Image (cartoon, rainbow, N blue to C red):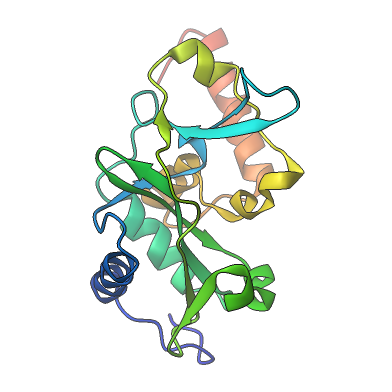
Length: 193
């Protein structure tokens, strides 16, 4: 259900506008969508005290319908969505979908271009190539959170996408805890299903 404050387009219309926007900025118009688990923030090997951002899709590949599920869930909120470009890869523009009321205060001075009355902003991010991480050890040792990358706190995780697929909605924290306990009990009792 759309928030009456926004007139959200369907996903295909929003994606078409995003591709046109990227093309207008002379960037790769084909998005490579990633989620929280795909981000790989690492300490720089060349510059101490600096972090570098990469991504991976080998170890936690997004399902084909993950973007649609995330978009639908975010579209039901009253918060601003952001189509956020992280950088380039040989496969296209690496993008992540974000949503939070905090983005309402972000505007064109910061690079957030508002789209009509959709409640959606487009952010082209930095230019240059992003490294796609294929080494499992590097991905496992990644930095999970850093205040300098606060925007990414508002991305959807693939775990949440799976919850929506299974239960029709994201689980509450106590429900996640109960699910993990049930799983442990099943393993302890020798009943994996």
